[in-house]
Length: 140
Image 1 (cartoon, rainbow, N blue to C red):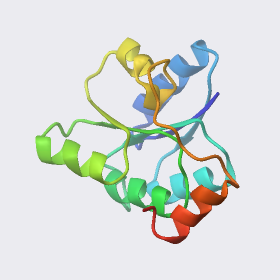
Image 2: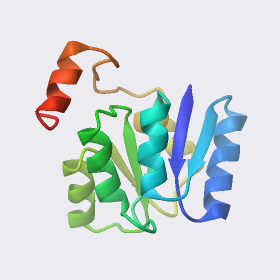
Image 3: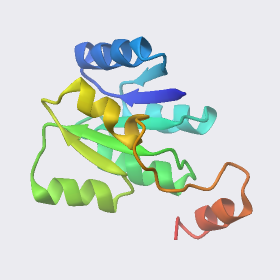
């Protein structure tokens, strides 16, 4: 399983990456939303952990762009922003889950959108005509 971590705080990204690797999960790091979009198009990730407050385009816009570009890996928004409107914006923008900082690493691992064992929404596979048709219609 391969996870993309999108986090501009180097120390936090390193902690998450190290923890995922200890669980035998491969993990890559992007510091900016633009890099995450490029990396997610080039690599078939099983999950994406996405911070909201990023340089350049923020996590909300990054998540929307990922979905518009046909990236269907589960997305876990990870952020210090814990307001209801923030959580709703993340979920409405295509995120599968939302976890606020500070967080327990055990909880992050338990979240399906971060590669955990919980229930996942079915996503069409790459090359699936249904997925490609939805992408062409803007994800509908």
